[in-house]
Length: 210
Image (cartoon, rainbow, N blue to C red):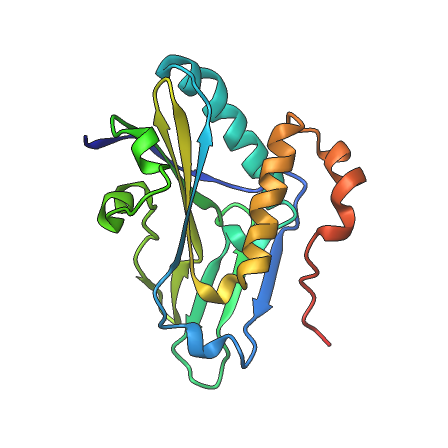
């Protein structure tokens, strides 16, 4: 059955996050610039109604996502590709301009079939994968978001969280670290201090000045 998109919004980092951050790409990042986005789907058993999901769960997911972005600013940033070949590509975050795209959807598909341990037709999963916005042309550079997110509800059964990111954002370990941080902050009900007490050592180091 078809999936219906209910909302698409942009979630920024919260007030108090850094005003600006630029992370230049390394030599090892460059070969991946033209590679297709990396896609991940995580399914969770979470029986709830559509009204409860929209009124309670979705707002909490947005809030915890925003708090997580404070510690993973590049996720909310854009890949900047200068038209001047003498300048290097970078991932840039600017407060008030940068945010990550989040789509909320509902599906009538068979949740149990999708998570079943049997051979699957891969095409049936693409409707749960978010689309990264296309490249935007600016006067001196091109820009494209590095990540997009999509949360799909299967009423009365569960949810699917979809991720799409450019490879230059980070390797699998880096992106999974972001996912785990979002899950932890969400589980703690948005308690950022509690999260930092337990997970401060696992946060990324973004300084490439050396």
